[in-house]
Image (cartoon, rainbow, N blue to C red; front, side):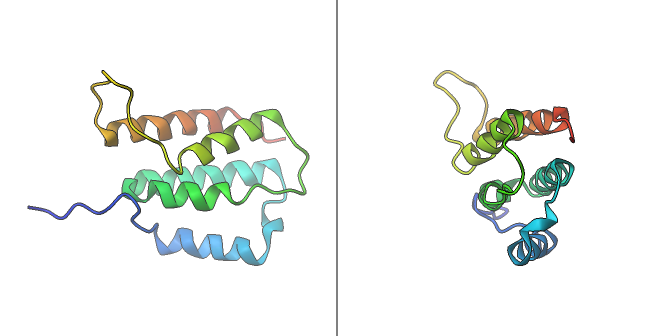
Length: 119
């Protein structure tokens, strides 16, 4: 039987290197366009490695630039990313597997991010 990685599998080194760079200089996310691009990068990273979804959500949620003005649409997406740190289980009666449920949550997030205005 093939080994199934745990749900907290670390993301790729490429993603971790980017997070490390952000720790050194958060101003890399200087505009809303930068934030949106970062979120899309995180979503693509999770889609490439679904078992790393929770750590990616945790790391991504930590980087919301305080130097940018508050915007309701970006705040809402930021909250959704935070919720993906511990996505829970499908509702009773829902026939989806946990993987399908989490895939659907990330797909919903991706749709929300793509709809954001850059400026």
